[in-house]
Amino acid sequence: MHTLSLVNPYTETAFAEVGVTTPGQLESAVRDARGAYEDWRRSDIADRVALCGQFVEAFRAEKESIARDVTQQMGKPISQARGEVDTAIDRAEQTIAMAPEILADDSAPELPGFERYVRHEPLGVVLDIAAWNYPLLIAVNVVVPSVLAGNAVIIKHSSKTPLCGQAFVQAFARAGAPDKLVQQIVAGHAETEALVRDSRIDFVSFTGSTKGGHEIVRSASDRFIDVGLELGGKDPAYVCADADFDFAVANCIDGAFYNAGQSCCAIERLYVDEAIYDDFVDAYVAKAREYVLGDPLDESTTIGPQASKSAPDFLRSQVDAAVAAGGRLVVDPATFEISGHGWFAAPGVVADAPQDCSLMQEESFGPVIGITKVRSDDEAIRLMNDSPYGLTASIWTADAGRAARVGAEVETGTFFMNRCDYVDPALPWTGVKDTGRGCSLSRYGFLQLTRRKSMHLRVEV
Image (cartoon, rainbow, N blue to C red; front, side, top):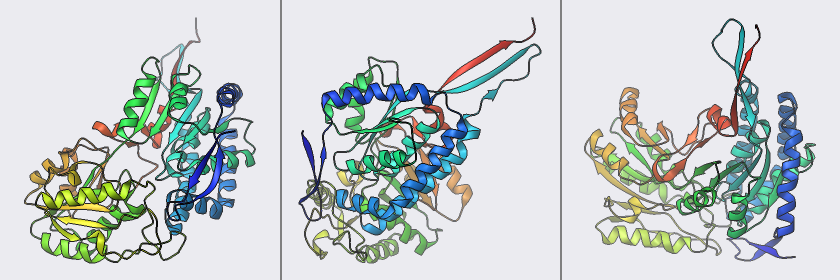
């Protein structure tokens, strides 16, 4: 049997092995998923809610083990990994609470002699191709609503974090889920592409790179199925002169460097009103220097290693290129002390970063950021929109009317006022431009995992 070695990005050594799904096992997984779906689609919403509630309890019972697996697989500091488990549970519970109302039949306007309504029927088998950076949250966004909607699920987690997919499968099994309702495969690109093309797969959710998104679309292009794509981001923040200064500084740096910057919705570009620009940069620099890099299993560590070995060199190249183009290196990654070894990228901050440099245009996915000053809302909007991506954007101001006006002009999936790097289960998680298409969460996420059937009944003849 072929196995996949999991390498801890801090120790740089293998700590576990998982079996790679064979062609025969892959065929069985799809066949079994179809069988599980045929029974599950006839289940009552109360049964689905009950099962997912038991899944939550089973997941909660393994919190510490799951958190440690996250840390060892992709380097997230243990305190943040525990936070991700808690958030995944909270998101699942909110999704469960919303499901009965959202999945209930929609009534059409009354018409004498007729009963007319719209049913939300399950699609069939959902393939969830989940990313490694938030390996629990990305999966829970798809797996739980899929099961609630009456679908079967096959999880194809990142090769960096397959233990997280396994955690979902095991928790559903302990919850008493029907056999093969939720499965995991461990497969490469060729096998995944073949699965996307398989006529027994009814929906594909993919979280990953824009390049990967194009590959998914090409693989599905011969079939009339929908694909949900949550891809890259280069999310901007605009700090106005009337913002709560200390609050904006603290949140804009946490929004950039949390999870070592490895978040699709991390702040990656900062635009600051010229009236407070110099003071903001000084305060931001002071906060950046407080980060502690080291063993992610150490409670005091605030930035762990990057999940990818190549990431530190790429991030340093972005910083160097921004400085060569005229930016000022105000936080030098080379000045940080790192406890131990591993694939670390220390914080890097470039003030006066040119808008056309890679640091302001190309997704970083690490703890580096460019800051530049702006003179007006119009200039901020223009620069915020100067990007091929559009996942989230934020404004930091005391004026809600101003936030609404700016937000109406910014090309993004989610616009925040005095908040960032947050996913709200009550709102659709979506993006524009090269960030992808479709959505997860909220009523709109459920609709993506179901098909509408119009019921048009003449009851009086």
